[in-house]
Image 1 (cartoon, one colour):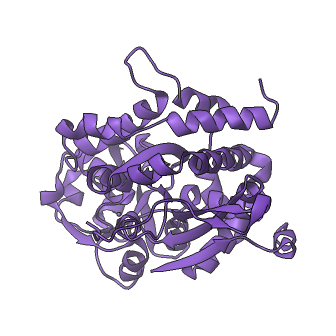
Image 2 (cartoon, rainbow, N blue to C red; image 1 turned 180 degrees about the vertical axis):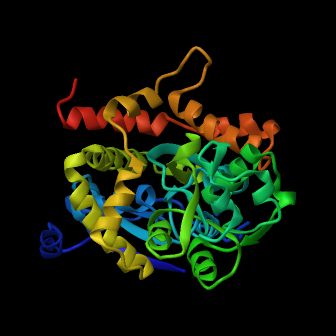
Length: 374
């Protein structure tokens, strides 16, 4: 399911907001112009998902007019997970996407994508069981971030979206327990459908995140049995784009990333958490029909680690290993997937070659110039 939201709003609306094989359809990746003359805006089709780091920056950038001030008309398409988001790219539904690390890897290997930036780090991935589960009764047995042992987890029916960060989380959890996917039954469902199925009595364990996890946590009879943060394995949201689009639209991409940096730095300021929470509530309602409270939204914001300018500058610096900071971060994400067996070590170089800091470096230079930062 998706909804398309145009990121060009009337000033009055802005004021009121204070408070993942796809098809082979040929697509023209040259950026179109909107309007005429010197005031013409460059259209950029962007996409996001339903967690803080891949949704709130898009809503915030719209509400603050960030990209419009840089001469861009940004249109957003929202998706419930990475696989359908990637499948929609070849037909031209979007140019630049905000997406989880697992799907970003798939984008590189199957859709000729490049990673060009990072969003916030997600620490909201969790797993639930019913309170009468033997895993809950076993309690903390010393497995990092996880209740129970291999004995209790073996044979469980686990609901999770295959190909998502939640799936990577499950595989890491099983590895920590000394188990593999063959030791459990995996039921593949997207996060929304999976949550409803779990609440209706299906499965023994559900892996989820963000507002969906908060909804389950608020209901009686369910207990958190695992957190990704407890394993110190948070992964960032990624900004990706097709290689062909990047080669033809450098100016638009650099401007888009300049705006993205401005928004991400704004989100890193804890004083803006309340407004960010309001926008998260708005985005979840408009894009996904999900009602959430301000308190729940704030909890989600606090479980997302946004970064400062120094961090983004470090992403573009090359180390003694010959890798940029951005490549080094994404290498860490990829290594998680190699460890859990969902990716192969032999593809590492191909993946790293597709992590490109060229555009981000230029965007940072523009940002610093526009804000008089030496």
